[in-house]
Image (cartoon, rainbow over all chains, first blue to last red):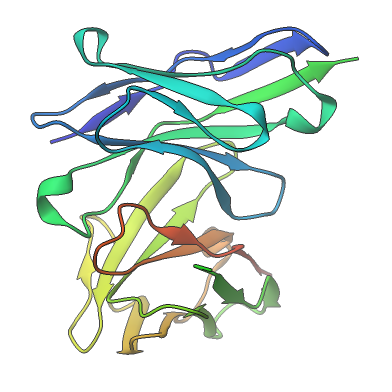
Length: 115
Length: 115
């Protein structure tokens, strides 16, 4: 079984400040990890993913995340927040053993940017 | 590439009627499609997994007779909400995955309102 915990349902940062969204996972096997962004009334857009290899993953819109196996974490960061980053962010995990296995999502973190 | 189109984006229907939502993969063959439901301010909850040409697998607690899923081709899956009631009002999102890919691609979602 797999699970995802996102600490902080709401995060507010000032424009230009560092963005840090936390994600911890539980998995009995090495997981695939994902971050998605959701704008109001829209579907999910993939920000970045980790499968194998380099543990620091760079995604779109200046976001990056680091897979830390020892901490079972996959926190999302961005050095400088922009107003357009305001959205809901979901961390997700999948089990690569089963190929097209379904994603297990965290409960999401709503990011607010303060002008 | 990897575009998933969901239609309609918004639908309002009367209580007791049925509503069909389509999920199409436009530029790849989706051997597996997933249907999620998102309640306000909550994460996505997987409803069912459908594989082309076979019956859908429903998650625990999801009424298969109420949420009919058909995956008749490698590019189309449909979700029919039968005898809809106001409590079925929600945001429904599909995703599609092809063999060899490590992530699912999401449609833009359908906002269903039952009045």
